[in-house]
Length: 561
Image 1 (tube, one colour):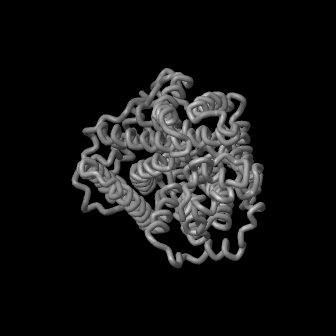
Image 2 (cartoon, one colour):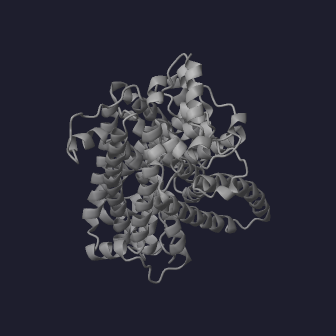
Image 3 (cartoon, one colour):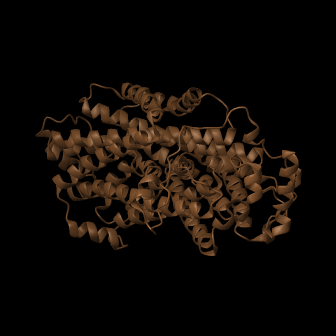
């Protein structure tokens, strides 16, 4: 009887009846089995849902905002990971305050993209990886999973090594890089199970780590006393006087560091932690509003912390040479042997050298507080990165493993290459590897941005909350701009390799890469309304799909819809 009811609904919801752009032969596609038919409910780390206060009729309620507060701050941690901190300090050291407007613009663009991710999760009750699993056919789906997994591994390596570097600085070199990685892995496993004591306690712990970062980097800001006029000028005047290729590459690197592909998947999953009746259009609309406000506040906080780092290194170390730093460090007890050659080349810094330089110029307290901030950044982003890995793997592969097994697998995939790097690489020479990881993540951006724009633009998935014309055009332009900027970063990196063999391999890889991006873009353009490109492709929006996108509703509720 239930099957007959579902079949009736499918016929009622057929795209052929409502004028949607999907006119393809979807009936040839067998949809995945409904989670309602499984023995156990599908779950990630959500074993509870936060209740939303009822009977609050104000246009804006702080009680409701507080209930929705959490997912946006967890998402914002990706804007504060060690890779971002390193990009910030390099920006300040190479370009002074001149690229703060790029940081501001990248953060605003990031907010707009996170809005799409949150809306997808709220409206459908599914996160991006789950939607991709149901919408793309097998081969593209597996390719998409591999690409996103590579982005998570690249990000995770930066985050874990950031923690290891912080431990090395705090122990004055007594804890080697590989030992720091093992410590980070261990405590990450411990912290990941904090949600067993309540989701709000877990979110409070992340809030504590963000507070530690704000105090640590804020202390450095107050200590260095940057020129406030220059800070504001750099933030709101979109110009870079006297900038060359080095500063241009740094500006591109800022965009790549801020907008991270796995964060889109993460945010679309985190918003599922609130108890929202998706049958009620008013509740869904209200949830979208409060999540956007919360995300705005969270990214504003992360932006301020990033500004602290840029301004500190812009004020203290812009136009400094290795010789300048070496002379100052020689007069201190801060270990710095071999870090700063005796030449007049512009100072090159990373998160390790940055801590040493701060210690040389402003005392040991500046070094240790810097290391504490890096440790908080690395630990928090490692945990959210692990959650991203779980959501992506569960969504794309539809895993039905125990929670511990899922955590162990996702951790192992990301940690193994990190541990190898830590064993065979010196803590003082990690800049080249960090550049490679930034390039790796930049290349994966289309595999998050294109799907999120595709699915949030389709009324068959989003109903009344599908993107309007403004968001379709604006979102398309923003994604095109971000991808173009990041591809420039990739080209600059590859062209500097100076190896014919690597050029050939890069060319072959580029052909396959661009074909897959083109495939996703083609589906996206059809979803945006360019129906002339619809050649009978399986954009994945089979007439069966709505049943499973709304899988947590029973049949009566779907009939009500």
